[in-house]
Length: 74
Image (cartoon, rainbow, N blue to C red; front, side, top):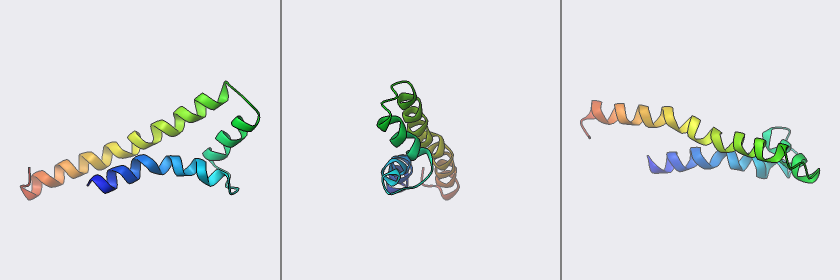
């Protein structure tokens, strides 16, 4: 489960790297804010990306805990 957990937590940050090759998503907003030196928008966009990981990770962890109980591994 650790591999899945880390993948989910790091995946949103790959979006920022993908902005460098021309994607049009949340990472592009980070790229534009940094290029425009927009000090107000950059932290907001960064926090949106930072919160995506835990929000996606929570349901997976709940599912894994329930699955362990069903299988008798806990």
